[in-house]
Image 1 (cartoon, rainbow over the protein chains, first blue to last red):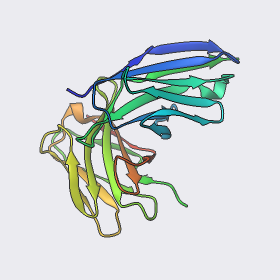
Image 2 (tube, chains in turn blue, purple):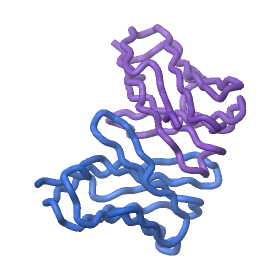
Image 3 (cartoon, rainbow over the protein chains, first blue to last red):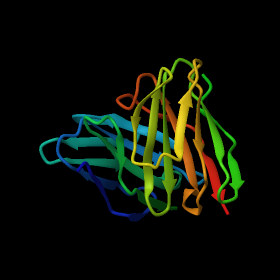
Length: 108
Length: 113
């Protein structure tokens, strides 16, 4: 069964801290997506990766295929980073399966 | 380029009624996927349409259906509404499908009373 698990469920941080959100998944994944959802519901796609590492501004996503694990890092966190972060996996069925999300709150 | 638009943004319906939601993708995108988000189940894939054909379907009852028009706009329909259908319904468009980056609309929040 294709599954995605995220941790932690909730995360609080002080502005400026380095943040890591983890995602583990079942074998055979084709690609992993990281999404950001702000209060009000809008979702933004942050990264789509199948190997290695991607960086965009203060956000870095890594994936280790052998360990079936991906991480999303936020450097120098800011209150505007407060959101729910969701990882989603895609297998050969081509359907996205989502993790339960990590609620991040960054305090000034 | 205009983003993905969804209408209506909010909707209140009564049990037993039916509802139609609309999604206009980004110009040039041929794939539209629909998702349901609830506090209990999180985000779940409903179905994907590509070039007017349903290409993939999640594990939802037949009360949930959809279609895509020649201009790539898509609609989803839920018949015989149940209280458990209350959710945020999101659509996302991409150039070719779930293997590409997904661009999400703002969602339609459906409340069933």
